[in-house]
Length: 312
Image (cartoon, rainbow, N blue to C red; front, side):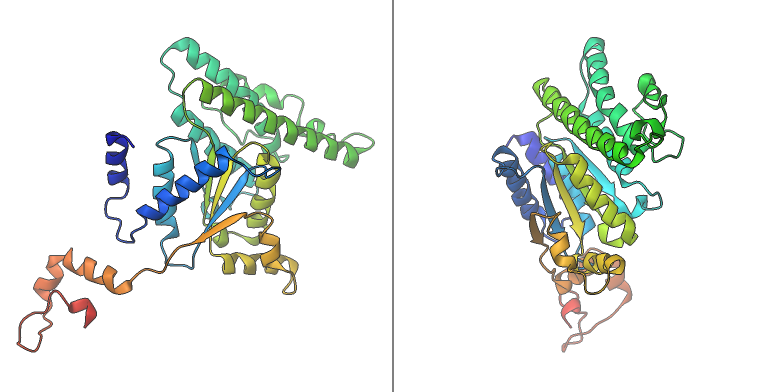
């Protein structure tokens, strides 16, 4: 580990009252190992950070994103914020685009144009998928002007919905779109890594999944699995598993095996350890001296018991 990386980690985890830094390093090591030595036929790897509300999942995931971004392209999706729309793939595509753009800082104009061309090949397919008949561009490409040509044939033609065998053709077309997207995304990532712009894998962190509308949460899990499988992408889901299981049951019924269903999307899980409320209260008390100057909690000797107030 370089001195610069160690310094950046110190900045990222400054004020880590929950003692999560070591856990983040373990997660990073595990993700790297799974990407370098994937299980046969495993496709993209999915990893869940599980914990009940109030354990600091978002705090952990936001800093994990910063740590992983030191070496890898990391997309961050707040599913709860984005569930006002009806297309989770759009949110994922936009986050991926932003993550790649952060890493693509070539030194000369020729390299920048080459990178832009590589991005457009993926963006055109992503845009076709992201258009759910809305008739407008839902995916931008950081100023790549040729993107709009992807929409000239129209959404109905892309999915074959106007043909005599519309349903059958639509299914075949969507399968081809998925296969093309996977191929082009994999080629793009390999090429950009070869250019020294970043180190794979692409990591997509999805937070607040359990707070979403039930249909949106299920759609995100399903479509992410289909489109990013076999691309070497690592998904990290932040979730309250019990709450997410309840979300699934609200759609499919109380008798539906929700936990078994969720296992389709999560191959490995860690549970955030419970935090010491006493330690957190004491730390907040000591870091805010204006509180101790206004409140008086005498001990047996009549002195203000500043060091032990949270334990009293």
